[in-house]
Image 1 (cartoon, one colour):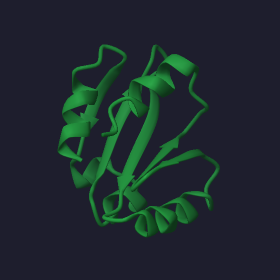
Image 2: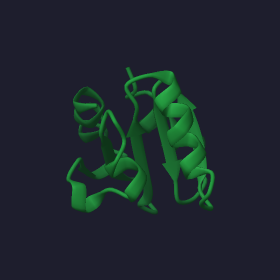
Image 3: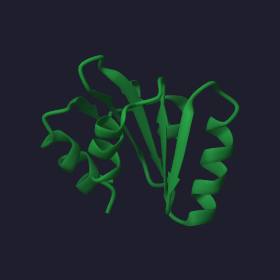
Length: 99
């Protein structure tokens, strides 16, 4: 999670990167591997990343996000939840930081 947060902080399309509990939604805040909140692009689209310790954890996190009206992408043990659908450049800015 920390490597992902550092990568996001280094991307000019991404701002306000935080791992603080007060900034995370309830799912990211309670994720077994931690969470990240950031804003992406010119419109400052909010994105939450929730990390599981395993792929099964991520499946559970994904199911939680599907209860809300957000766009969700699962990548290995991480789930990315967007408040609005990002464009390709915004999506890549976040997904490319997952290692």
